[in-house]
Image 1: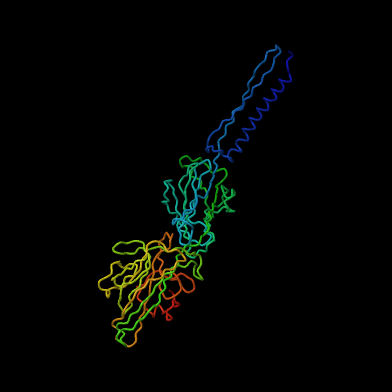
Image 2: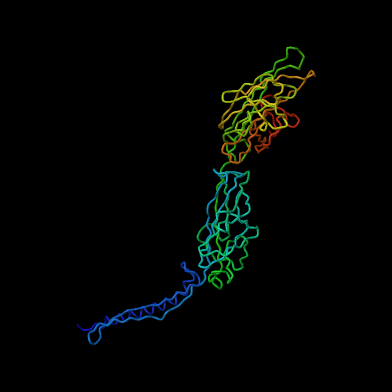
Length: 471
């Protein structure tokens, strides 16, 4: 067969192409490798050699195989800085929906995505938008799961973080008391525009002077740091940001309303003698199913018990209490509806009713009773009204021809699902639940003695729970 010179020419041309490609690759490698890093550690030396094979048929008709090898091209991978900042979720320390007063933990993860060890600049504050207040930022620098390092308001520069290493950061946020349901709380760590969690907020060139105190950015190690490649990063320092947003839910609140009327009055057997007249009081407890007019950020919830000491056992009970009015004493055993128990206490009224020592045993001497109460275990759902909490007193020690007997009832419990176990407290005489003010704002839930004081508390002069005041 005649030798194929076309075949030989093609192979030779191919060899020259490969050799040129190898040389070109060597030239390009130095340019593209630093920008991509490709997971290769900075300072790594890479040798690149191209080889080619070709064959041809010589004049004697023998097929000859030849090999060619290019010169070795040696490159060193440049130091490339890189930082990634991602959200790690929010934890509500009280559980359930996010409502007012909740303490929220927003966690973030800062990762070294470059090819050389680096330090991180972590600001001492995050950008908070919405009805919330931030606490001191903390960091888990040793990776043990505990946020043991408090970052000062100025900032913190970490120690050397290896390639692929990370630091967890926690931003604590407390929801404002009057946070409006449906409003948003946003927590932004770092400042890399447009700050929208897109790719353009990750691993971006840092401003040349690094002056922004809210940035999260890389800080090159000194050349003496173990594992550090000498020199500065080829791409300069980098920065990143991440943001998390939470929607506020309505805060559950039990709206408990204790109501009271003087149900009956009977004159004594001795006319014109106010020393032995009988007064019967009828109490009721209503759990409103709607929030008071003027209130914000609250949704009606069920009422459950609070800790009450009955028969030397402390347990969760709903309590309706009434201090025996001045110039009277308990006249007879009180009555209660099904599911409720009558309790008595001789504890002086200097202690509040929810701290008194109660007993379900009728005292032998009713004149020693300082308060009569009604307790129930379990739950009263919103919209429930309890009637039939009744007791009777008889006047004593009244030596004048006229006298005013003042009396006030109190109720105690908690809101179902309230992880803070806040007291739900109300006083009789008006239509405001849970001691709310007349304008719908939240009143004090710190109980007083329960001894009526017309001068400071006002009076329900119509005997129909239409009094006005702070309770």
